[in-house]
Image (cartoon, rainbow, N blue to C red):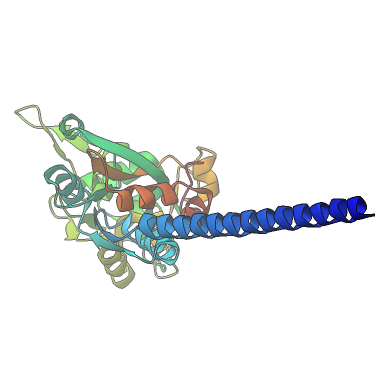
Length: 299
């Protein structure tokens, strides 16, 4: 009997020791798990993006760049995106000299600019719309007629089916990406005595700075003609067909409407973590959905 009681006592003690060890192990594991979670939380806090990103350049790219910046800031509240529309050429130069983190251009880079070591990020494609006053009865022009009007070879609306009124040509300022792309596509550039390409647009053209200024001038001048980014088109002006094709996103995607250009974001060297995150967001599905609201996506 004593032997049986001794065996039972040993068994009870063994169970107690085992339970104690098991409980001790459980407490230790719990502590390790807590420490792991705390470490992950600290790493997450450390990985949170902070800082500012300056985005400078094309007034055509500015609206979509701002919309993308607003959406990005919701995801990364610690990053401030500052978007400034000052023209494509200014944006390219700002990227090169480092005064901007990201440059915006609404045209292809010129041959000399390509030698500056800039990285091109195509974020969208945009149409350039030839616009007139809403009261103008002209609906369609051939590409050749557009070129001749801007060169000053066609001077009266009656020559293209309109009223007997002199045409007022409105163009963009020097350095404008929209102007550069429009002149290149519509063959409105010629070489001077030194062999350098110069604008062939009529000297008497009214020069307006920015898409908004062109639109406002055309909207207020009944017999004028100008060109703006498709994203700026609204009921205040009338977009003309070119060679029978309407300036729409669908027609550009189908390569039926020929007057379009790329929207570029430019960087030089390795971008900052915040700038890289912004660019990655632009090319993500969410970013391209925003781009697709008024422009042609790259995906």
